[in-house]
Length: 368
Image (cartoon, rainbow, N blue to C red):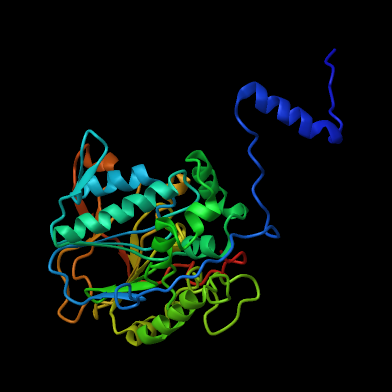
Protein backbone atom coordinates (compact mmCIF):
# COMPACT_ATOMS: atom_id res chain seq x y z
CA UNK A 1 0.00 0.00 0.00
CA UNK A 2 1.32 3.39 -0.97
CA UNK A 3 1.03 6.20 1.56
CA UNK A 4 0.38 9.70 0.21
CA UNK A 5 1.82 12.44 2.39
CA UNK A 6 0.37 15.94 2.31
CA UNK A 7 1.89 19.18 3.58
CA UNK A 8 -0.39 21.83 5.04
CA UNK A 9 -0.20 25.04 3.03
CA UNK A 10 1.01 27.00 6.05
CA UNK A 11 4.08 24.73 6.33
CA UNK A 12 4.97 24.83 2.61
CA UNK A 13 7.36 27.82 2.86
CA UNK A 14 9.27 26.00 5.67
CA UNK A 15 9.54 22.85 3.57
CA UNK A 16 10.86 24.83 0.60
CA UNK A 17 13.36 26.62 2.79
CA UNK A 18 14.59 23.31 4.17
CA UNK A 19 14.98 21.96 0.65
CA UNK A 20 16.96 25.05 -0.27
CA UNK A 21 19.38 24.47 2.63
CA UNK A 22 19.72 20.81 1.67
CA UNK A 23 20.38 21.27 -2.06
CA UNK A 24 22.04 24.69 -2.04
CA UNK A 25 19.71 25.86 -4.82
CA UNK A 26 16.99 28.38 -4.01
CA UNK A 27 13.51 27.48 -5.25
CA UNK A 28 12.75 29.18 -8.55
CA UNK A 29 9.80 31.55 -8.33
CA UNK A 30 6.90 30.97 -10.64
CA UNK A 31 6.70 33.25 -13.71
CA UNK A 32 4.86 36.45 -13.01
CA UNK A 33 1.36 36.79 -14.36
CA UNK A 34 -0.08 39.55 -16.50
CA UNK A 35 -1.27 41.44 -13.44
CA UNK A 36 2.14 41.48 -11.77
CA UNK A 37 4.42 44.48 -11.48
CA UNK A 38 6.68 45.45 -14.35
CA UNK A 39 10.21 46.78 -14.48
CA UNK A 40 10.25 50.50 -13.67
CA UNK A 41 10.86 52.82 -16.65
CA UNK A 42 14.19 54.61 -16.96
CA UNK A 43 14.77 57.79 -18.96
CA UNK A 44 16.34 57.30 -22.38
CA UNK A 45 17.10 59.76 -25.16
CA UNK A 46 17.79 58.16 -28.52
CA UNK A 47 20.03 59.83 -31.10
CA UNK A 48 17.83 59.38 -34.16
CA UNK A 49 20.52 60.59 -36.55
CA UNK A 50 22.87 57.84 -35.37
CA UNK A 51 20.15 55.21 -34.83
CA UNK A 52 17.39 55.96 -37.35
CA UNK A 53 13.90 54.50 -37.16
CA UNK A 54 14.36 52.97 -40.62
CA UNK A 55 17.78 51.90 -41.87
CA UNK A 56 18.18 52.70 -45.56
CA UNK A 57 20.89 51.25 -47.80
CA UNK A 58 19.85 52.03 -51.40
CA UNK A 59 22.70 50.31 -53.22
CA UNK A 60 24.40 47.53 -51.24
CA UNK A 61 27.83 46.90 -52.71
CA UNK A 62 27.95 43.23 -51.77
CA UNK A 63 25.55 40.34 -51.19
CA UNK A 64 22.53 40.95 -48.96
CA UNK A 65 21.56 38.31 -46.42
CA UNK A 66 18.44 38.12 -44.24
CA UNK A 67 17.43 35.88 -41.37
CA UNK A 68 14.18 35.71 -39.43
CA UNK A 69 13.32 34.95 -35.80
CA UNK A 70 16.13 33.62 -33.62
CA UNK A 71 14.41 33.63 -30.21
CA UNK A 72 17.48 32.98 -28.12
CA UNK A 73 18.74 30.04 -30.21
CA UNK A 74 22.23 31.51 -30.54
CA UNK A 75 24.13 28.30 -31.44
CA UNK A 76 21.82 27.80 -34.43
CA UNK A 77 22.32 31.41 -35.56
CA UNK A 78 26.09 31.13 -35.33
CA UNK A 79 26.01 27.84 -37.22
CA UNK A 80 23.92 29.49 -39.94
CA UNK A 81 26.32 32.41 -40.34
CA UNK A 82 29.32 30.08 -40.43
CA UNK A 83 27.72 27.99 -43.18
CA UNK A 84 26.89 31.12 -45.16
CA UNK A 85 30.50 32.27 -44.99
CA UNK A 86 29.77 35.40 -42.97
CA UNK A 87 31.68 34.54 -39.79
CA UNK A 88 34.50 32.23 -38.79
CA UNK A 89 34.65 30.85 -35.27
CA UNK A 90 37.79 30.24 -33.25
CA UNK A 91 38.54 27.34 -30.95
CA UNK A 92 38.40 29.80 -28.06
CA UNK A 93 34.73 30.49 -28.81
CA UNK A 94 35.23 33.93 -30.35
CA UNK A 95 34.45 34.77 -33.97
CA UNK A 96 35.45 37.12 -36.77
CA UNK A 97 33.46 38.65 -39.59
CA UNK A 98 34.63 37.32 -42.97
CA UNK A 99 31.71 38.60 -45.03
CA UNK A 100 33.58 41.67 -46.29
CA UNK A 101 31.10 44.34 -47.36
CA UNK A 102 28.08 42.06 -47.13
CA UNK A 103 24.92 43.28 -45.42
CA UNK A 104 23.04 41.08 -42.97
CA UNK A 105 19.58 41.99 -41.66
CA UNK A 106 17.79 40.10 -38.89
CA UNK A 107 14.07 40.89 -38.79
CA UNK A 108 13.52 41.01 -35.03
CA UNK A 109 12.66 38.59 -32.23
CA UNK A 110 16.30 37.88 -31.53
CA UNK A 111 15.34 37.24 -27.92
CA UNK A 112 13.01 35.19 -25.68
CA UNK A 113 11.71 31.62 -25.82
CA UNK A 114 15.19 30.09 -26.17
CA UNK A 115 17.87 30.02 -23.45
CA UNK A 116 20.37 32.50 -24.90
CA UNK A 117 18.71 35.92 -25.15
CA UNK A 118 21.39 37.90 -23.31
CA UNK A 119 24.14 36.00 -25.09
CA UNK A 120 22.40 36.72 -28.41
CA UNK A 121 22.35 40.45 -27.67
CA UNK A 122 26.05 40.35 -26.78
CA UNK A 123 26.73 38.47 -30.02
CA UNK A 124 24.70 41.01 -32.01
CA UNK A 125 26.61 43.94 -30.51
CA UNK A 126 29.92 42.27 -31.36
CA UNK A 127 28.73 41.35 -34.86
CA UNK A 128 27.62 44.92 -35.60
CA UNK A 129 31.07 46.20 -34.62
CA UNK A 130 33.10 43.52 -36.41
CA UNK A 131 31.08 43.79 -39.63
CA UNK A 132 31.43 47.59 -39.68
CA UNK A 133 35.20 47.32 -39.18
CA UNK A 134 35.41 45.30 -42.40
CA UNK A 135 33.09 47.55 -44.41
CA UNK A 136 30.05 45.35 -43.90
CA UNK A 137 26.82 45.87 -42.00
CA UNK A 138 24.74 43.88 -39.53
CA UNK A 139 21.24 45.25 -38.88
CA UNK A 140 19.01 43.85 -36.12
CA UNK A 141 15.41 45.07 -36.21
CA UNK A 142 12.86 45.35 -33.41
CA UNK A 143 10.35 42.54 -33.15
CA UNK A 144 7.33 42.14 -30.93
CA UNK A 145 9.44 40.28 -28.36
CA UNK A 146 11.91 43.16 -28.06
CA UNK A 147 9.03 45.65 -27.77
CA UNK A 148 7.11 43.32 -25.45
CA UNK A 149 10.07 42.82 -23.13
CA UNK A 150 10.48 46.59 -22.83
CA UNK A 151 6.75 46.90 -22.14
CA UNK A 152 6.12 43.96 -19.83
CA UNK A 153 9.27 42.48 -18.29
CA UNK A 154 9.51 40.47 -16.12
CA UNK A 155 6.05 39.03 -16.67
CA UNK A 156 5.51 35.39 -17.52
CA UNK A 157 5.94 35.59 -21.31
CA UNK A 158 9.51 36.82 -20.73
CA UNK A 159 10.48 34.30 -18.05
CA UNK A 160 13.29 32.79 -20.21
CA UNK A 161 15.13 36.12 -20.12
CA UNK A 162 14.66 36.42 -16.36
CA UNK A 163 15.94 32.85 -15.96
CA UNK A 164 19.06 33.60 -18.00
CA UNK A 165 19.68 36.80 -16.06
CA UNK A 166 19.31 34.94 -12.76
CA UNK A 167 21.78 32.28 -13.90
CA UNK A 168 24.31 35.09 -14.41
CA UNK A 169 23.60 36.62 -11.04
CA UNK A 170 21.80 39.57 -12.65
CA UNK A 171 18.54 41.28 -11.82
CA UNK A 172 16.34 41.32 -14.91
CA UNK A 173 15.06 44.86 -14.23
CA UNK A 174 18.20 46.60 -12.94
CA UNK A 175 20.78 44.80 -15.09
CA UNK A 176 18.94 43.99 -18.33
CA UNK A 177 15.78 46.02 -18.83
CA UNK A 178 17.08 49.36 -17.58
CA UNK A 179 18.14 51.94 -20.17
CA UNK A 180 21.33 52.39 -18.14
CA UNK A 181 22.58 48.95 -19.18
CA UNK A 182 24.14 47.85 -22.47
CA UNK A 183 21.26 45.39 -22.94
CA UNK A 184 18.60 48.04 -22.36
CA UNK A 185 20.31 50.56 -24.61
CA UNK A 186 20.64 48.04 -27.43
CA UNK A 187 16.97 47.11 -27.18
CA UNK A 188 15.93 50.76 -27.31
CA UNK A 189 18.02 51.55 -30.40
CA UNK A 190 16.66 48.88 -32.72
CA UNK A 191 15.21 50.09 -36.03
CA UNK A 192 11.54 49.51 -36.76
CA UNK A 193 12.33 48.55 -40.35
CA UNK A 194 14.99 48.61 -43.06
CA UNK A 195 14.94 49.27 -46.80
CA UNK A 196 17.95 47.65 -48.44
CA UNK A 197 18.40 47.30 -52.18
CA UNK A 198 14.74 48.12 -52.74
CA UNK A 199 13.50 45.44 -50.30
CA UNK A 200 11.46 46.41 -47.25
CA UNK A 201 12.27 44.45 -44.09
CA UNK A 202 10.18 44.52 -40.92
CA UNK A 203 9.22 42.02 -38.28
CA UNK A 204 5.55 41.43 -39.05
CA UNK A 205 5.77 42.52 -42.69
CA UNK A 206 2.49 44.39 -42.32
CA UNK A 207 3.18 48.02 -43.28
CA UNK A 208 -0.59 48.72 -43.23
CA UNK A 209 -0.29 50.97 -46.27
CA UNK A 210 1.90 53.55 -44.54
CA UNK A 211 4.84 55.41 -46.01
CA UNK A 212 8.33 55.21 -44.58
CA UNK A 213 7.94 58.70 -43.11
CA UNK A 214 4.72 57.72 -41.32
CA UNK A 215 6.31 54.58 -39.87
CA UNK A 216 9.37 56.53 -38.72
CA UNK A 217 7.17 59.20 -37.11
CA UNK A 218 5.08 56.78 -35.06
CA UNK A 219 8.15 54.79 -33.99
CA UNK A 220 10.08 57.86 -32.83
CA UNK A 221 7.11 58.83 -30.69
CA UNK A 222 6.86 55.29 -29.30
CA UNK A 223 10.51 55.22 -28.22
CA UNK A 224 10.75 58.83 -27.06
CA UNK A 225 7.78 58.40 -24.75
CA UNK A 226 8.77 54.87 -23.71
CA UNK A 227 5.18 53.79 -24.34
CA UNK A 228 6.09 50.33 -25.61
CA UNK A 229 2.90 48.82 -24.27
CA UNK A 230 0.66 51.11 -26.31
CA UNK A 231 -1.74 49.86 -28.94
CA UNK A 232 0.83 50.79 -31.59
CA UNK A 233 3.59 48.86 -29.84
CA UNK A 234 2.33 45.61 -28.40
CA UNK A 235 -1.07 45.75 -30.02
CA UNK A 236 -2.84 44.04 -27.13
CA UNK A 237 -6.52 43.08 -27.33
CA UNK A 238 -8.67 46.09 -28.12
CA UNK A 239 -5.92 47.80 -30.08
CA UNK A 240 -7.26 50.09 -32.74
CA UNK A 241 -6.09 52.35 -35.54
CA UNK A 242 -3.85 53.80 -36.77
CA UNK A 243 -1.39 51.00 -35.98
CA UNK A 244 -2.84 48.01 -34.14
CA UNK A 245 0.29 46.13 -33.15
CA UNK A 246 2.77 47.12 -35.86
CA UNK A 247 5.31 44.55 -34.62
CA UNK A 248 2.89 41.64 -34.40
CA UNK A 249 0.18 42.37 -36.97
CA UNK A 250 0.51 39.38 -39.27
CA UNK A 251 -2.50 40.17 -41.44
CA UNK A 252 -0.44 40.65 -44.57
CA UNK A 253 -1.43 42.16 -47.87
CA UNK A 254 -4.86 40.49 -48.26
CA UNK A 255 -7.44 39.64 -49.12
CA UNK A 256 -5.82 37.50 -51.83
CA UNK A 257 -2.89 39.91 -52.03
CA UNK A 258 -5.10 42.68 -53.38
CA UNK A 259 -3.33 45.41 -51.40
CA UNK A 260 0.23 44.29 -52.11
CA UNK A 261 0.92 46.62 -55.04
CA UNK A 262 -0.46 49.69 -53.26
CA UNK A 263 1.34 48.98 -50.01
CA UNK A 264 4.67 48.36 -51.72
CA UNK A 265 4.18 51.54 -53.74
CA UNK A 266 3.57 53.54 -50.55
CA UNK A 267 6.90 52.25 -49.24
CA UNK A 268 8.65 52.97 -52.53
CA UNK A 269 9.77 49.34 -52.97
CA UNK A 270 8.99 46.27 -55.05
CA UNK A 271 9.54 43.57 -52.48
CA UNK A 272 9.17 42.91 -48.75
CA UNK A 273 10.49 40.34 -46.29
CA UNK A 274 9.26 39.51 -42.80
CA UNK A 275 9.56 37.07 -39.89
CA UNK A 276 7.13 36.73 -36.98
CA UNK A 277 5.06 33.70 -38.05
CA UNK A 278 6.75 30.37 -38.83
CA UNK A 279 3.53 29.00 -40.32
CA UNK A 280 2.95 31.89 -42.71
CA UNK A 281 2.02 30.90 -46.26
CA UNK A 282 1.38 27.35 -44.98
CA UNK A 283 5.13 26.72 -45.19
CA UNK A 284 6.12 25.58 -41.71
CA UNK A 285 9.89 25.46 -41.29
CA UNK A 286 10.59 26.79 -44.77
CA UNK A 287 11.87 30.07 -46.22
CA UNK A 288 9.61 30.77 -49.19
CA UNK A 289 8.24 33.61 -51.30
CA UNK A 290 4.91 34.46 -52.85
CA UNK A 291 3.02 37.02 -54.96
CA UNK A 292 5.74 37.01 -57.60
CA UNK A 293 4.99 38.89 -60.79
CA UNK A 294 6.68 40.11 -63.97
CA UNK A 295 7.11 43.49 -62.30
CA UNK A 296 9.47 41.86 -59.81
CA UNK A 297 7.10 42.11 -56.85
CA UNK A 298 7.59 39.49 -54.17
CA UNK A 299 7.01 38.82 -50.49
CA UNK A 300 9.47 36.64 -48.56
CA UNK A 301 8.71 34.78 -45.35
CA UNK A 302 11.84 34.33 -43.20
CA UNK A 303 10.68 32.80 -39.90
CA UNK A 304 11.30 29.05 -40.01
CA UNK A 305 10.42 28.22 -36.41
CA UNK A 306 13.94 27.57 -35.12
CA UNK A 307 12.79 28.04 -31.52
CA UNK A 308 10.24 25.25 -32.02
CA UNK A 309 12.67 22.81 -33.60
CA UNK A 310 11.07 23.15 -37.05
CA UNK A 311 14.41 24.06 -38.60
CA UNK A 312 17.99 24.85 -37.65
CA UNK A 313 17.60 28.19 -39.39
CA UNK A 314 17.29 29.62 -42.87
CA UNK A 315 18.98 32.47 -44.70
CA UNK A 316 17.87 34.56 -47.68
CA UNK A 317 20.62 35.76 -50.04
CA UNK A 318 20.53 38.29 -52.85
CA UNK A 319 23.56 38.81 -55.07
CA UNK A 320 21.83 40.50 -57.98
CA UNK A 321 19.40 43.41 -57.81
CA UNK A 322 16.79 44.67 -60.27
CA UNK A 323 17.48 48.10 -61.86
CA UNK A 324 14.55 49.64 -59.99
CA UNK A 325 15.23 47.81 -56.73
CA UNK A 326 14.42 44.36 -55.43
CA UNK A 327 16.18 41.03 -55.65
CA UNK A 328 16.53 39.67 -59.17
CA UNK A 329 17.48 36.15 -58.09
CA UNK A 330 16.53 35.35 -54.47
CA UNK A 331 18.29 32.34 -52.99
CA UNK A 332 18.13 30.44 -49.72
CA UNK A 333 20.83 28.52 -47.90
CA UNK A 334 20.44 24.82 -48.57
CA UNK A 335 19.35 22.67 -45.65
CA UNK A 336 22.47 21.15 -44.05
CA UNK A 337 21.02 17.65 -44.44
CA UNK A 338 20.99 18.22 -48.20
CA UNK A 339 24.14 20.30 -48.50
CA UNK A 340 26.57 18.29 -46.41
CA UNK A 341 28.86 19.41 -43.61
CA UNK A 342 30.56 22.75 -44.15
CA UNK A 343 28.68 23.46 -47.36
CA UNK A 344 27.47 26.95 -48.19
CA UNK A 345 25.33 25.91 -51.13
CA UNK A 346 22.37 28.08 -52.07
CA UNK A 347 19.27 27.28 -54.10
CA UNK A 348 16.49 29.43 -55.64
CA UNK A 349 13.75 30.49 -53.26
CA UNK A 350 10.45 28.81 -54.20
CA UNK A 351 8.03 31.51 -55.35
CA UNK A 352 4.34 30.69 -55.58
CA UNK A 353 2.51 32.54 -58.33
CA UNK A 354 -0.78 32.65 -56.43
CA UNK A 355 -1.59 33.79 -52.90
CA UNK A 356 -1.77 30.83 -50.47
CA UNK A 357 -4.95 29.89 -48.67
CA UNK A 358 -3.63 31.40 -45.44
CA UNK A 359 -3.46 34.89 -46.91
CA UNK A 360 -5.31 36.70 -44.15
CA UNK A 361 -5.16 35.02 -40.74
CA UNK A 362 -6.70 36.75 -37.71
CA UNK A 363 -4.39 39.07 -35.77
CA UNK A 364 -2.80 37.67 -32.63
CA UNK A 365 -5.22 38.16 -29.73
CA UNK A 366 -2.43 38.25 -27.17
CA UNK A 367 -0.38 41.12 -28.60
CA UNK A 368 3.12 40.88 -27.18
